[in-house]
Each structure stands twice: as C-alpha cells, then as structure tokens.
Length: 248
Ligand SMILES: *Cc1c(COP(=O)(O)O)cnc(C)c1O
Picture 1 (spheres, rainbow, N blue to C red):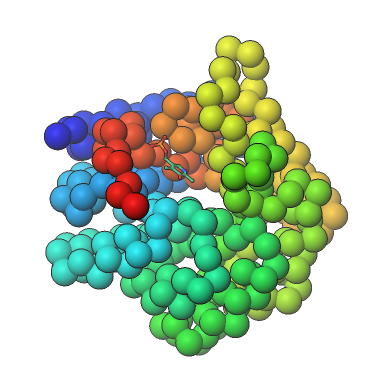
Picture 2 (cartoon, rainbow, N blue to C red):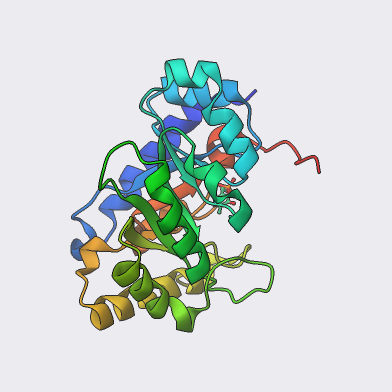
C-alpha cells in the first residue's frame, strides 16, 4: 500500500514551494489541496485524514454517499469536507445533497442543474440561509466527452447563478483540460483559458477577481497550475497511489 502520510507531506511541501513562485498578485491566498479519493478505500481516507488532510474529492455519487455515511468516517473524520467533482446527473441531486459535510459541488455545467440544486438545497441544509457552494465547470478543451459548459457560455451561467439561484454561493471556475499536455511547451492552454474566463466574468459581472476561485491542476500538473494561479488543486494518484479499476 502507498505510504499516504509521506505522499501527502510531499505534495503539501511542493504546493507551498510552487506557491512561492507565483507572481505577487497571486500571493493573497493559500492554495487548497483536495485529496481525490475516488475508487480508493475507506482506510486510505482515514490515513490521509489522520495525517491532517481535510478536503476530499469524489467523482461518483453512490460512492461518495457510501463513504460519507461510513460509520468510521462519521466517527473519526468529523471535520471532513467533501468536494463533488464528477458528472452529476439530475436524478442524483437529492442523493448528493444529503451527504453530511458536503462542502462544494465543483462540476455545475448548465442552468438546469444549477436550478435543481438551488431548489432542492433548502430541504437539506442544516441552518437557514446557509448556501450551497458551487463552482462552474468549464470544458476548456472542448472535448465531447468532457463535462462542463462551453467557454462562450460561462458568463451567462455564472450570471444566472448569481441572479437567480439565491441558495447557491458561486465560488469559482473549475476545469480538467486535455490530458497529456507537455508543459515544456509553455503554460497549459486549458489553464490559461480558465484564467481568461475568470477575467471576463470579473469584468462583465463586476466581481472582484479575488472572489473567483480557480480549481485546476491534478497529480501531474498541480505545481504548474499553482504557479499560474490555481486556488484549488485536485490530487489523487500522487497521494493515494494508482487507482483500482472501476467495476461497471
Ligand atoms: C480523478 C480526478 C482527479 C485526480 O486525478 P489524479 O491524476 O489522480 O490526480 C482530479 N480531478 C478530477 C475531475 C478527476 O476526475
């Protein structure tokens, strides 16, 4: 089994180091590490939590619900913060909103999903006026099989969330990008695309850039993403080792 505590320490150190290489305009925040535990065991999550990790990311609704309700997790990981980062089907919305310690849904890609989350959240929230954190996922690589809204629709979707979805808190933008980009060729174009989207919505909707997070960067490029200004990196393999296959 992977030495999760050692891997986690190494990733955290690299994040801190990468953060020092940012331009001064980006020095106002600490990047957040989301440990992506999809397809990994409950034991792996417990190990990472014990080593100090609090934010965890999952891609599949059923798996997240199962883990979040696991008695050991409930007992030993009281401060866990779950990030949902996968494709969210509309018929699973009630299921996901019932997750204890749900911190954010990073993968909102269209108005219908935003509306459904907005309308359903009051049935699940623990206190009045507590908003559900969301990010808008952008399909920066314009690949058919990737989720997320088109680059040209980001502004409209964000505007819709802010103006019409009063139970949601818009936190920022998320992207995956095309796999396998070689950064010796320069800044990752999918990351720079997300940065441009942020600039555009900041200008068009008069939102301070500092209030729009960027969720980008995974195991093979999180340091690069942080240097470019990522506020939230989603790292799985570098912490937990290779993932078991998903049985379908
Ligand atoms: C699986 C996954 C990750 C983590 O990938 P690694 O390469 O294992 O770090 C990050 N983001 C999303 C959306 C994922 O599906």
